Length: 323
Ligand SMILES: [Zn+2]
Image 1 (cartoon, rainbow, N blue to C red):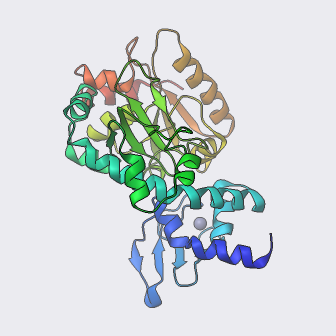
Image 2: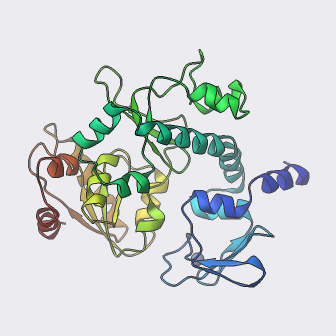
Protein backbone atom coordinates (compact mmCIF):
# COMPACT_ATOMS: atom_id res chain seq x y z
CA UNK A 1 0.00 0.00 0.00
CA UNK A 2 1.31 3.44 -0.92
CA UNK A 3 1.21 6.75 0.92
CA UNK A 4 -1.81 8.37 -0.77
CA UNK A 5 -4.09 5.38 -0.07
CA UNK A 6 -3.02 5.43 3.56
CA UNK A 7 -3.69 9.14 3.86
CA UNK A 8 -7.11 8.64 2.34
CA UNK A 9 -7.94 5.87 4.80
CA UNK A 10 -6.84 8.04 7.72
CA UNK A 11 -8.90 10.94 6.45
CA UNK A 12 -11.95 8.77 6.18
CA UNK A 13 -11.56 7.44 9.70
CA UNK A 14 -10.81 10.27 12.12
CA UNK A 15 -9.19 8.87 15.25
CA UNK A 16 -11.85 10.43 17.48
CA UNK A 17 -14.68 8.68 15.60
CA UNK A 18 -12.93 5.37 16.00
CA UNK A 19 -12.36 6.01 19.70
CA UNK A 20 -15.98 7.01 20.27
CA UNK A 21 -17.17 3.89 18.50
CA UNK A 22 -15.08 1.90 20.95
CA UNK A 23 -16.75 3.58 23.91
CA UNK A 24 -13.95 6.03 24.67
CA UNK A 25 -15.11 9.24 26.31
CA UNK A 26 -12.93 12.24 27.15
CA UNK A 27 -12.99 13.34 30.77
CA UNK A 28 -11.80 16.86 30.08
CA UNK A 29 -11.10 19.33 27.33
CA UNK A 30 -7.76 21.05 26.96
CA UNK A 31 -6.73 24.04 24.88
CA UNK A 32 -6.86 23.92 21.06
CA UNK A 33 -9.61 21.27 21.11
CA UNK A 34 -7.41 18.57 22.56
CA UNK A 35 -9.03 15.98 24.81
CA UNK A 36 -7.89 13.97 27.78
CA UNK A 37 -9.31 10.68 29.01
CA UNK A 38 -8.52 7.24 30.34
CA UNK A 39 -6.14 5.24 28.17
CA UNK A 40 -7.75 2.30 26.37
CA UNK A 41 -4.35 0.69 25.90
CA UNK A 42 -3.32 0.15 29.49
CA UNK A 43 -5.03 -0.10 32.85
CA UNK A 44 -5.39 3.60 33.51
CA UNK A 45 -6.74 5.05 36.76
CA UNK A 46 -6.24 8.74 36.12
CA UNK A 47 -6.68 10.20 32.66
CA UNK A 48 -3.37 10.11 30.80
CA UNK A 49 -4.55 9.62 27.23
CA UNK A 50 -4.29 12.75 25.10
CA UNK A 51 -6.12 13.07 21.78
CA UNK A 52 -5.65 15.81 19.25
CA UNK A 53 -8.72 15.52 17.00
CA UNK A 54 -7.47 18.13 14.53
CA UNK A 55 -4.34 16.05 13.83
CA UNK A 56 -5.97 12.67 14.54
CA UNK A 57 -3.11 11.75 16.84
CA UNK A 58 -2.92 10.34 20.34
CA UNK A 59 -0.32 10.11 23.07
CA UNK A 60 -0.49 8.37 26.43
CA UNK A 61 1.55 9.80 29.32
CA UNK A 62 1.03 6.54 31.20
CA UNK A 63 2.19 3.82 28.81
CA UNK A 64 4.08 6.03 26.38
CA UNK A 65 2.22 4.82 23.30
CA UNK A 66 1.25 7.28 20.64
CA UNK A 67 0.55 7.78 16.96
CA UNK A 68 -2.23 7.79 14.41
CA UNK A 69 -5.39 5.74 14.04
CA UNK A 70 -3.48 2.83 12.44
CA UNK A 71 -1.02 2.76 15.32
CA UNK A 72 -3.97 2.85 17.71
CA UNK A 73 -5.63 -0.15 16.03
CA UNK A 74 -2.33 -2.06 16.16
CA UNK A 75 -1.99 -1.46 19.89
CA UNK A 76 -5.66 -1.84 20.75
CA UNK A 77 -6.19 -5.11 18.89
CA UNK A 78 -2.56 -6.20 19.24
CA UNK A 79 -2.10 -6.83 15.55
CA UNK A 80 0.55 -6.04 12.93
CA UNK A 81 0.36 -3.09 10.58
CA UNK A 82 -1.26 -4.90 7.63
CA UNK A 83 -3.84 -6.59 9.81
CA UNK A 84 -4.66 -3.20 11.34
CA UNK A 85 -5.31 -1.86 7.85
CA UNK A 86 -7.64 -4.76 7.11
CA UNK A 87 -9.53 -4.12 10.34
CA UNK A 88 -9.85 -0.43 9.48
CA UNK A 89 -11.12 -1.14 5.96
CA UNK A 90 -13.70 -3.57 7.36
CA UNK A 91 -14.70 -1.11 10.03
CA UNK A 92 -15.01 1.75 7.57
CA UNK A 93 -17.47 -0.28 5.51
CA UNK A 94 -19.40 -1.68 8.38
CA UNK A 95 -19.52 0.90 11.16
CA UNK A 96 -21.87 3.47 9.56
CA UNK A 97 -24.22 0.71 8.41
CA UNK A 98 -24.34 -1.00 11.78
CA UNK A 99 -24.89 2.34 13.45
CA UNK A 100 -27.80 3.23 11.18
CA UNK A 101 -29.31 -0.25 11.33
CA UNK A 102 -29.18 -0.13 15.13
CA UNK A 103 -30.96 3.24 15.07
CA UNK A 104 -33.67 1.86 12.81
CA UNK A 105 -34.23 -1.17 15.04
CA UNK A 106 -34.39 0.99 18.16
CA UNK A 107 -37.19 3.01 16.59
CA UNK A 108 -39.18 -0.19 16.08
CA UNK A 109 -38.81 -1.59 19.58
CA UNK A 110 -41.72 0.15 21.21
CA UNK A 111 -44.01 -0.18 18.21
CA UNK A 112 -44.19 -3.93 18.52
CA UNK A 113 -45.84 -5.45 21.55
CA UNK A 114 -44.26 -8.86 21.00
CA UNK A 115 -40.78 -7.35 21.40
CA UNK A 116 -41.57 -5.59 24.66
CA UNK A 117 -43.35 -8.70 25.88
CA UNK A 118 -40.28 -10.80 25.12
CA UNK A 119 -38.02 -8.35 26.98
CA UNK A 120 -40.30 -8.60 30.00
CA UNK A 121 -40.12 -12.39 29.89
CA UNK A 122 -36.34 -12.13 30.00
CA UNK A 123 -36.50 -9.73 32.95
CA UNK A 124 -35.61 -6.57 31.02
CA UNK A 125 -37.80 -3.83 32.43
CA UNK A 126 -35.88 -0.66 33.13
CA UNK A 127 -35.94 2.05 30.43
CA UNK A 128 -32.41 3.02 31.54
CA UNK A 129 -31.22 -0.46 30.65
CA UNK A 130 -32.88 -0.39 27.21
CA UNK A 131 -31.19 2.97 26.65
CA UNK A 132 -27.84 1.83 28.03
CA UNK A 133 -27.72 -1.26 25.79
CA UNK A 134 -29.42 0.53 22.86
CA UNK A 135 -31.76 -2.43 22.48
CA UNK A 136 -33.82 -2.59 19.30
CA UNK A 137 -36.16 -4.89 17.45
CA UNK A 138 -35.98 -6.25 13.93
CA UNK A 139 -39.57 -6.81 12.88
CA UNK A 140 -40.49 -8.10 9.46
CA UNK A 141 -38.21 -6.36 6.97
CA UNK A 142 -37.96 -2.64 6.26
CA UNK A 143 -34.26 -2.19 6.97
CA UNK A 144 -33.16 -2.65 3.37
CA UNK A 145 -35.37 0.12 1.99
CA UNK A 146 -34.55 2.38 4.94
CA UNK A 147 -30.80 2.08 4.36
CA UNK A 148 -31.17 2.44 0.59
CA UNK A 149 -33.16 5.63 1.12
CA UNK A 150 -30.20 6.88 3.14
CA UNK A 151 -28.04 6.27 0.08
CA UNK A 152 -26.36 2.96 0.84
CA UNK A 153 -26.04 0.76 -2.25
CA UNK A 154 -27.59 -2.70 -2.09
CA UNK A 155 -24.19 -4.22 -2.77
CA UNK A 156 -22.82 -2.73 0.48
CA UNK A 157 -25.83 -3.99 2.43
CA UNK A 158 -25.27 -7.49 1.10
CA UNK A 159 -21.57 -7.35 1.91
CA UNK A 160 -22.29 -6.28 5.47
CA UNK A 161 -24.59 -9.24 6.00
CA UNK A 162 -27.52 -7.02 7.02
CA UNK A 163 -29.26 -8.08 3.82
CA UNK A 164 -29.13 -11.64 2.49
CA UNK A 165 -27.76 -12.58 -0.93
CA UNK A 166 -31.30 -12.68 -2.32
CA UNK A 167 -32.07 -9.25 -0.92
CA UNK A 168 -34.10 -9.83 2.23
CA UNK A 169 -33.37 -8.39 5.67
CA UNK A 170 -31.16 -10.87 7.52
CA UNK A 171 -32.59 -9.96 10.94
CA UNK A 172 -36.26 -10.74 11.35
CA UNK A 173 -38.21 -11.10 14.60
CA UNK A 174 -35.09 -10.57 16.63
CA UNK A 175 -34.19 -8.46 19.62
CA UNK A 176 -31.13 -6.58 18.44
CA UNK A 177 -28.11 -5.37 20.41
CA UNK A 178 -25.42 -3.23 18.72
CA UNK A 179 -21.85 -4.31 19.47
CA UNK A 180 -18.56 -2.52 18.68
CA UNK A 181 -18.80 -3.33 15.00
CA UNK A 182 -21.31 -6.10 14.82
CA UNK A 183 -24.94 -6.67 15.63
CA UNK A 184 -26.28 -9.44 17.81
CA UNK A 185 -29.83 -10.60 17.16
CA UNK A 186 -31.72 -12.93 19.50
CA UNK A 187 -34.64 -14.64 17.83
CA UNK A 188 -37.95 -14.35 19.64
CA UNK A 189 -39.37 -17.14 17.52
CA UNK A 190 -38.43 -20.71 18.40
CA UNK A 191 -38.52 -21.69 14.71
CA UNK A 192 -35.42 -19.62 13.77
CA UNK A 193 -31.81 -20.13 14.85
CA UNK A 194 -31.46 -18.53 18.28
CA UNK A 195 -28.37 -16.38 17.78
CA UNK A 196 -27.30 -14.29 14.83
CA UNK A 197 -24.25 -12.12 14.21
CA UNK A 198 -23.01 -10.33 11.13
CA UNK A 199 -20.08 -12.06 9.39
CA UNK A 200 -16.72 -11.14 10.87
CA UNK A 201 -15.52 -10.80 14.43
CA UNK A 202 -17.99 -10.36 17.27
CA UNK A 203 -15.44 -7.91 18.65
CA UNK A 204 -14.13 -7.39 22.16
CA UNK A 205 -15.83 -7.86 25.51
CA UNK A 206 -19.15 -6.07 25.83
CA UNK A 207 -18.99 -2.53 27.29
CA UNK A 208 -15.36 -3.15 28.22
CA UNK A 209 -14.41 0.52 28.44
CA UNK A 210 -16.92 0.98 31.24
CA UNK A 211 -15.86 -2.15 33.06
CA UNK A 212 -12.10 -2.46 32.78
CA UNK A 213 -11.32 -0.05 35.61
CA UNK A 214 -13.09 -2.22 38.17
CA UNK A 215 -10.72 -4.39 40.21
CA UNK A 216 -13.39 -7.12 40.12
CA UNK A 217 -15.20 -8.04 36.94
CA UNK A 218 -18.08 -10.45 36.36
CA UNK A 219 -17.97 -12.30 33.03
CA UNK A 220 -21.18 -13.83 31.64
CA UNK A 221 -22.03 -15.76 28.46
CA UNK A 222 -25.06 -13.92 27.16
CA UNK A 223 -26.30 -10.37 26.74
CA UNK A 224 -29.50 -11.18 28.62
CA UNK A 225 -27.34 -12.29 31.55
CA UNK A 226 -25.50 -8.99 31.26
CA UNK A 227 -28.81 -7.12 31.13
CA UNK A 228 -30.34 -8.45 34.34
CA UNK A 229 -27.10 -8.04 36.27
CA UNK A 230 -26.67 -4.46 35.12
CA UNK A 231 -30.29 -3.79 36.02
CA UNK A 232 -29.67 -5.23 39.48
CA UNK A 233 -26.84 -2.75 40.02
CA UNK A 234 -23.81 -4.89 39.07
CA UNK A 235 -22.12 -2.39 36.78
CA UNK A 236 -18.85 -4.35 36.72
CA UNK A 237 -20.34 -6.99 34.42
CA UNK A 238 -19.16 -7.80 30.91
CA UNK A 239 -20.09 -10.41 28.34
CA UNK A 240 -18.20 -12.58 25.86
CA UNK A 241 -21.29 -13.41 23.75
CA UNK A 242 -20.72 -17.14 24.08
CA UNK A 243 -18.59 -19.20 26.43
CA UNK A 244 -15.61 -19.24 24.12
CA UNK A 245 -13.47 -16.08 24.18
CA UNK A 246 -11.72 -14.84 21.06
CA UNK A 247 -8.09 -13.73 21.31
CA UNK A 248 -8.92 -10.08 21.72
CA UNK A 249 -11.39 -10.72 24.54
CA UNK A 250 -8.91 -12.96 26.28
CA UNK A 251 -6.18 -10.31 26.17
CA UNK A 252 -8.60 -7.74 27.53
CA UNK A 253 -9.23 -9.86 30.63
CA UNK A 254 -5.48 -10.29 31.13
CA UNK A 255 -4.49 -6.67 30.60
CA UNK A 256 -4.13 -5.87 34.29
CA UNK A 257 -4.29 -7.42 37.72
CA UNK A 258 -7.93 -8.04 38.47
CA UNK A 259 -10.30 -10.63 39.82
CA UNK A 260 -12.62 -12.21 37.26
CA UNK A 261 -15.82 -13.90 38.40
CA UNK A 262 -16.99 -16.44 35.82
CA UNK A 263 -20.78 -16.63 35.90
CA UNK A 264 -21.34 -19.10 33.06
CA UNK A 265 -24.47 -21.18 32.56
CA UNK A 266 -25.03 -24.17 34.85
CA UNK A 267 -26.63 -26.04 31.95
CA UNK A 268 -27.51 -29.70 32.26
CA UNK A 269 -24.91 -30.91 29.74
CA UNK A 270 -22.17 -29.13 31.67
CA UNK A 271 -20.80 -27.21 28.68
CA UNK A 272 -20.88 -23.83 30.46
CA UNK A 273 -19.05 -25.21 33.47
CA UNK A 274 -16.48 -26.98 31.29
CA UNK A 275 -15.83 -23.77 29.41
CA UNK A 276 -15.48 -21.89 32.71
CA UNK A 277 -13.05 -24.51 33.99
CA UNK A 278 -10.79 -24.32 30.97
CA UNK A 279 -10.90 -20.52 30.80
CA UNK A 280 -10.13 -20.31 34.52
CA UNK A 281 -7.04 -22.45 34.01
CA UNK A 282 -5.74 -20.29 31.19
CA UNK A 283 -6.41 -17.05 33.04
CA UNK A 284 -4.74 -18.29 36.22
CA UNK A 285 -1.61 -19.12 34.25
CA UNK A 286 -1.52 -15.48 33.22
CA UNK A 287 -1.75 -14.33 36.83
CA UNK A 288 -5.43 -13.36 36.78
CA UNK A 289 -7.42 -14.09 39.93
CA UNK A 290 -10.37 -16.24 38.94
CA UNK A 291 -13.49 -17.25 40.88
CA UNK A 292 -16.12 -19.57 39.45
CA UNK A 293 -19.72 -19.04 40.48
CA UNK A 294 -21.99 -21.97 41.24
CA UNK A 295 -25.45 -21.10 40.05
CA UNK A 296 -28.34 -23.41 40.96
CA UNK A 297 -28.56 -26.36 38.53
CA UNK A 298 -30.04 -25.52 35.18
CA UNK A 299 -29.74 -21.76 35.69
CA UNK A 300 -27.87 -18.97 34.02
CA UNK A 301 -27.71 -15.47 35.56
CA UNK A 302 -30.70 -14.42 33.48
CA UNK A 303 -33.02 -17.21 34.63
CA UNK A 304 -31.73 -16.76 38.19
CA UNK A 305 -33.05 -13.20 38.26
CA UNK A 306 -36.13 -13.88 36.13
CA UNK A 307 -37.21 -16.54 38.61
CA UNK A 308 -37.04 -14.18 41.53
CA UNK A 309 -33.36 -14.19 42.51
CA UNK A 310 -32.30 -10.94 44.18
CA UNK A 311 -29.16 -8.80 44.00
CA UNK A 312 -28.36 -9.81 47.57
CA UNK A 313 -28.61 -13.51 46.72
CA UNK A 314 -26.38 -13.04 43.70
CA UNK A 315 -23.91 -11.17 45.90
CA UNK A 316 -23.81 -14.23 48.17
CA UNK A 317 -23.01 -16.39 45.13
CA UNK A 318 -20.13 -14.05 44.30
CA UNK A 319 -18.82 -14.27 47.84
CA UNK A 320 -19.05 -18.06 47.80
CA UNK A 321 -17.34 -18.38 44.40
CA UNK A 322 -14.36 -20.76 44.33
CA UNK A 323 -11.02 -20.45 42.49
ZN1 LIG B 1 -1.71 4.22 28.08
